[in-house]
Length: 372
Image 1 (spheres, rainbow, N blue to C red):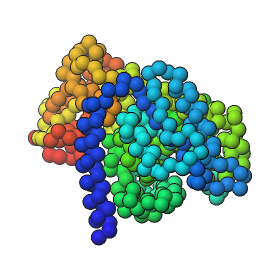
Image 2 (cartoon, rainbow, N blue to C red):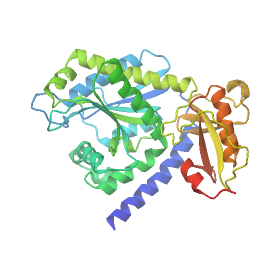
Image 3 (cartoon, rainbow, N blue to C red):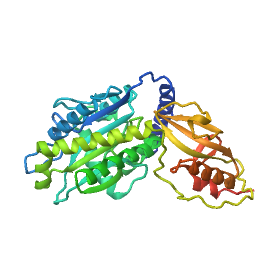
Image 4 (tube, rainbow, N blue to C red):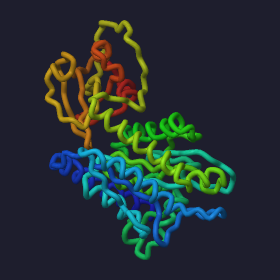
C-alpha cells in the first residue's frame, strides 16, 4: 500500500511539474544563460567524515566560488549560488532555487569518500533506472535528509533507504538526461585530459538533489578526501584552482555547443554512415520519423538559410533547448535517405527519431511495430 501511494504521489507531481515547466519555458524573459552552482553540504552537515581532517563542505564551497568567479566574467551568464557561506540548506531548497530562476544548468559539487584508498573523479546524472551499486551510492548522499527536522513534510514519503523511492526519482528528470550526460562528459573529459586526473566516468544514481530540477543537472564528485594523497590535492589551492577551472571550461564548452547550433546525440541507438538506402517504401503506420539535426538554446527561424539550405525544418522547445528536425515521413527508408542528406550538408551528428501520437518514442520501439 505504501509503495502504491508513493508512485501515485510521483505521478501527480509529474503531471503538475510537466504543466509548470511547459508554461514557464515559454515565459522565460531572461536572455542570459543561468547557471546554478550548489556547494554540497554545509553548516551542521560537514559531509562524509575523514580521518585526515578535511571537510567536504569547505572544499566544495571554495571550488563553487572559484567556478562562479570565472563564469561571472561573462556578461551573458548569470550565476546563482545555493550558498556562499557555511550554512545548512535542506536538499529540497537547492532544487527550488534553480527552478525559481528557470536556470539553464544545475551543478552540485562534492567530494567523495570510501573505506578503501579509492581515488578519481566521477560525475553523476540522475538514474532513470536503478541497480544495486548506484542505489548504495545514492543512499549515502541522500541520508542528509534525516538532518532536517521536517523532512517527512518536504519529501512526500520518500525513504532514502528504499529502492522503490530511488527508482521513482528518475521520472521528472528524464526529459533532460541527454543534456545532463553531455555536460557530465565535458566535465570528466576535462578532468582526465586537461589536468590528468583519473576519471572514473559518467555515472547515474538516484540523488534527491538532482531529481526535482527542471533543467540539465549534474553532481560532481571531485575526488576522494579519504585518500590522503587526493585529499591533500583537493584541500590545496593548486588542486582547487585546477579542478574549478576544469569545471568552468566544461560549462563554457557545453554552452558553446548550444550556441553553435550543433546537435549531439548521447544515446545513439544506431550509428550509420552514408550508405545506400533501399528506394522501396517501408511504411510504419501511426509512426512519424524525423531527422534531428540540432539542439540549441537559440530560437532560429526554420528557414533554409539557417540550416545549410535544408527545407522542411520543424522546431520543438524542450526545457531551455530548441530541437530542430529535418523531414516528416512514415517511410523509414525515406527518412534514412534524408539522414544521409543531412550528413552530407555537414550535420554529422544527425540521427533519426520517431514519434507516435505526437510523442517521441525510442526508435527501436518504433521499428518493432508492424510495417506495411
